[in-house]
Length: 203
Ligand code: GRF
Image (cartoon, rainbow, N blue to C red; front, side, top):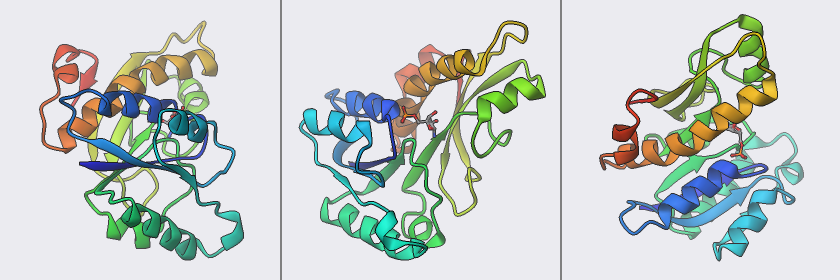
């Protein structure tokens, strides 16, 4: 499946998806990396990996989210993308794009949804005093972090010594395992990674 990855920054989840797609038996190939920020470090990595990586900055479109999304949609089609992974893409999408790609666009979120949608999830998990935290891969709908859940991975919280940064790193390591595994699942292929980590990753 020709895959596009949308990013806004660092791109570590993008890297895990690129690595997975390089495996001969993986059911997707990266055809495009798109960022709404020209200086996203993930773009450089993708280019160095020989991938088509472009920015469609949102700034010139001002408040016209739909016009920005139209520009994104045009690039996606040009590149022949048939499936989209949001990987740290920090813009809310409107129904224009979520309807056009319904069932073909997934996101990774750093919490066990429906807990802690939005930002600062690790700080909020610590504040709430939960003992289990994690990440979720879900279908993208117009509601923020609201689409149907595909897979989740859990990590422990150590309430006395944990900091938001330590917790974020623990979750991120699981994100990198979960995202390619969930993508495989959505594309209809059983995931060995998930089966080998059933205590940790729940589908
Ligand atoms: C990740 O924690 C992801 O779950 C969230 O944004 C962060 C992006 O990190 N949506 P990276 O750019 O993939 O390194």
